[in-house]
Image (tube, rainbow, N blue to C red; front, side):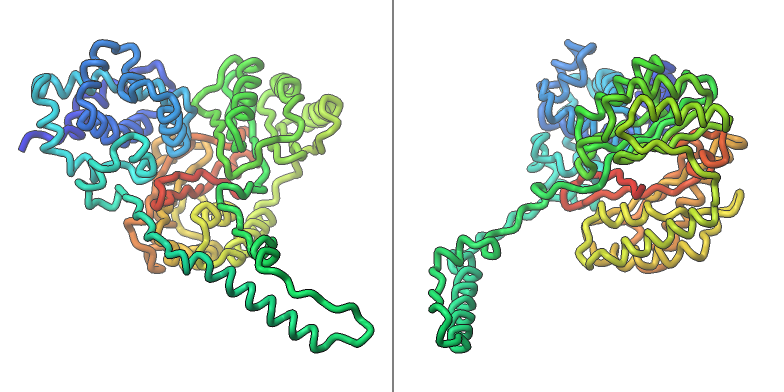
Amino acid sequence: MSISPIELLKEKVTPQIVSDQQLEVDADKKASLLAQFYPILLSLLHKFPDRVDSILANKDKALASLFADDAPITKQLIHRFASHHSLPDETVISLLDQSVAPSVEAIREEVGIHGIQGYLSQHLKGIASAFPAWASGLLSELGLGAVLGSESKSQHVYVQKKDKPVSVFRKILPILALIILAILVFFGLKSCQKPNEPAMTAPSASDVASSPSASMSPSASEVKSTTPAHFTFASGKTNTSPTCLAHVGDDSLATTIKSSIQKVFGKVGENCNVMADTAYANDLQGTTHLEAILTAIHKVPNASFEWKGNQLVVNAPDKAALKGLVDEIKSIAPDLEVTPAVALDEEQSVNKSIEDSKNALAGLGQQAKPEDIAKALNLQIINFPTASRELPARNKEILDQAATLLKEAPHVKLIAEGYTDSTGNAEVNKKLSQRRAQSVVDYLVAKGVSTDRLQAVGYGAENPVAENETEEGRFKNRRIEFKVVDTANGQTEVVKGQ
């Protein structure tokens, strides 16, 4: 059999995209993103062979041609890639757009323009097995449900089962039960009624059926999350390469944040990730003052803040500068509670995080939602000993609780991501972060969680959530983050516990 098209693209296309210096993205992260994109690209070329000519004729709009100018589905897929790989949407768009035309050209060179369809058909099972689980929820929107659903027996592709039709009797049974219960209660109360009390009237069937208790509860999509929006920001040593991480409820707020950073600092780099996630609130109190607050932050090297709800905690290495910065922001945004960061107490911070995580996990039922499990896990701080992957004993109790919930939640894949601060050698830090994430996964496996539902990834000092110039910032950057994939719908959730 000929070379797998995925391996072909990894060999021919990935090196040229990875070596391109236009995007300041780690080479491994580029390669990982492309490896997950190739099965989607190849599936679309197999299902819609006419798009090959369109891509080659419009190389400057290759990504749009691949998705037949379907902007909504393209935006949805881009956002999921961005969330899964912790990159800005614009960076993902640029990477994918660069890869589409070279991929088609590589396949054409391998088998000829007329052999593409047969070549992809020959390898369709392998393509389907590599399809990323977090993207499987988009199969029908991409027009790939029938093809990949029938070809793939891999754990990576999940085809949603159709619900069995419900009989009329089963639909009205709960209403009949409520009516009978209401009648029994009525006659029970009437037998206890005193002579001088007014007579009670039995409720009608329509009254019972239309009552709040008889109505159906709102669907999950109708229930709004109460998790506050969250925004951390650090100006950096030179005030030109800020780092940030924001989780907000809608695209408009995410756009406002990115636009304000762009105006004050000149660019939003790869270390600044602003993500829209419906698990978070749609508003962040005081964002009308955001540009002025960032301007104040810009004046102070290595200044940072943590913004949650109406609370803004500010930090800076120079204590005199910190006091002046807090006073200035208070005058800018009087509606916010602006406070200086307190001195770091690692022991107290870890103890509180462990207690919060325990309580959150204990409050989840056996049918816990994937994102709720990850939120509870992200409340804990896993404070590894220096240069060690040894899992602290107090975190094992948290992971014991999580293992029980994960075993009861069949549609959950958990990803443990390891991060370090920027102290020391970057390559050594990356390997250490991988080992630490793996130690979490290994412990969960030992507690009975299946290995194919777990993944460990080490990013080293990438994607900092705070400045690395202060002790507090370095402490926050040394962390394990949890992401989940709900394999019932392919949705990736990037969740925080702050």
